[in-house]
Image 1 (cartoon, rainbow, N blue to C red):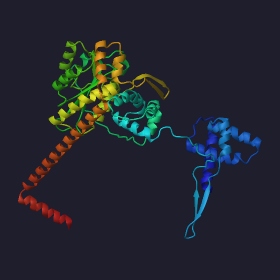
Image 2: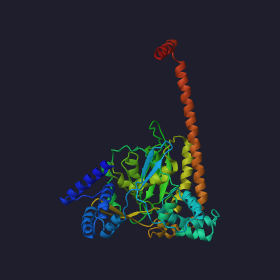
Image 3: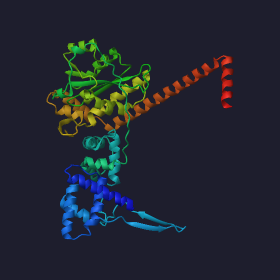
Image 4: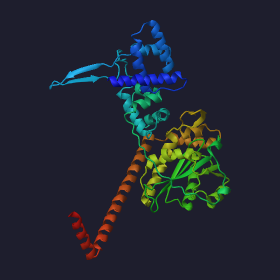
Length: 464
């Protein structure tokens, strides 16, 4: 203990010496604890005049407010010790790492009991596990729909608490339920060298569209970490202004499938497509897509190579829509393609009508500190309804569709299709394992007697 105290005093003297020399430095938490422990012992023993000098030095060193610094030094207590004698007579000393708090814990009645936690967890599962800032508007929009279809049975008091709950409280109550998955995919984009000079570059700084119709597109590969052979892709298209997202699965990333899927997706949007922005993959940078955009009077742009931030809107949806729905498994059969497209038909309605999202409206940098400001979370459906650039006829059609939608039934359909897709994946894995096993057995049986005998001989020699 004496050596530790001696080292602490030496460390404190070194800090004071550097500080008095005019060198600016910020103390870490451990260093502050050392300074407080050494200063408090001296502070509490001295008289008033000496205490003033010690306090001045302590404030300069730590940067604390003077009143707070005085409080810290006054209330600091030495580490408490507890001596215990064992059965064999050995003396054991336990030293507390933290000072004991004399204040009693504040007792306050809980507002959100189990009657609120159960429905909150149910709504969180329904929303596909979104954060509290997005879950609050989701509850406000979805709760009346669920009550209309008798999907949830809660009293008025519980409903009032759910609607009153803040995003921070939501995250705190759901803390034990949350699970984090650190899964990452790999890029499958191969650069298209042709026509690059014919397609202008568009960066994140050029996103100033305040009307729907300008979209970003990207392909998400379902290779499962095995790039051998053909496997399915998901074509993801999202509108920059409203966040409206459409997705469709294709056999592979051939240009013919990509363009046909893109034509099909543009019909599903509630507004006309005015601009398309893609990455530099060969599935997009080609004469077929360029001629299609020129024919339909669509502005066609591309991002800078190796700058994913240029396509930040679609990169978000690649995870929040595609990866969260399908994961990182390998899908490469026609049956899986059919199931995935059925899943996307249900998911597009659930995502666009019921899942709110936030948009970055301001970003400022002061030195190394970056401050971001987001707008209020809204569903793509609400953003389309609020837009002045969408026809009133289209808005009325969307409102009628919204009134007949049951979010709980949509979520159940999504879960059933996900389970069916996973069963197809497991079935394919078993078939592949059986095929590999048969091929391995046939390879062993095809060996000559000499090779088999030679293997047995070498194995016996190795065991010796």
